[in-house]
Image 1 (cartoon, rainbow, N blue to C red):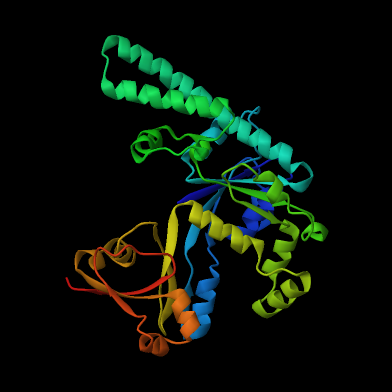
Image 2: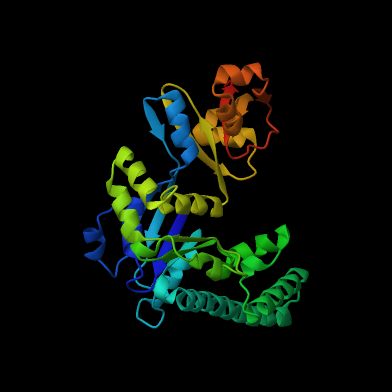
Length: 341
């Protein structure tokens, strides 16, 4: 699953990408007109807490792939390439500076709306031609859906805001509409204004998109510190957790993913799985044999474990469960699979 980062020049998207992926900023700036690619760990605080409980030899966080596009400019020669990458993205992340955040975000969303309207106009023309030659019920249904989307977009409302049926969503997936994609808004503020007015509250009002306010300068400083110094520095600055960690968790959720955990002395690990997945599908993320020979899953809830303090006390409380193949895995489940192949 890929999250594509984009923003206007000097918005801080290169620094943000560098912090997320660990790729040096100098390396990124050497090729400003090229797309950059990197991997980021989802620093889920639950994994960090489980690590303290089990003291494992290895700790593994879930991971997301990030792409960084050249500066967002649909008037330049890179327009076609930028639009192609946006369409291929599973999720978008738009970075704006605090000084012009509202204007930049509105312009970006307007470009997405225009792109989708042009796509609908083209598709409606094609459907009209096809219906003259050989009318079909499926084409008539598609025409009705396209007109519904057109009405929504002409009202300057992204398709994310419309409550489509599952059947309609299946049809729409083929079109790669940009306003239907998950989107995270990131507002980059100066370091000395990090605790001032929350610009996200203003930006996201009436929009279906999550927003994170951060300072790339401050996040860069935090990323350079070891764990002890990091906690001390954040406490001094009045920061509960790095905004980068919050952003990666939002990106993860926006992709339609949840995490379940496996724990033990050897490894504590977060496993990403599709929201709504049943136990055998979750097991297949670890190994395909688990799904093939699934017998049952031992399960407890992360929150219950933390409240109890240990597995032994959790079992005493009767909060360790056996689940069958019809169990729908939930975020925060701690699972151990029994299978036979």
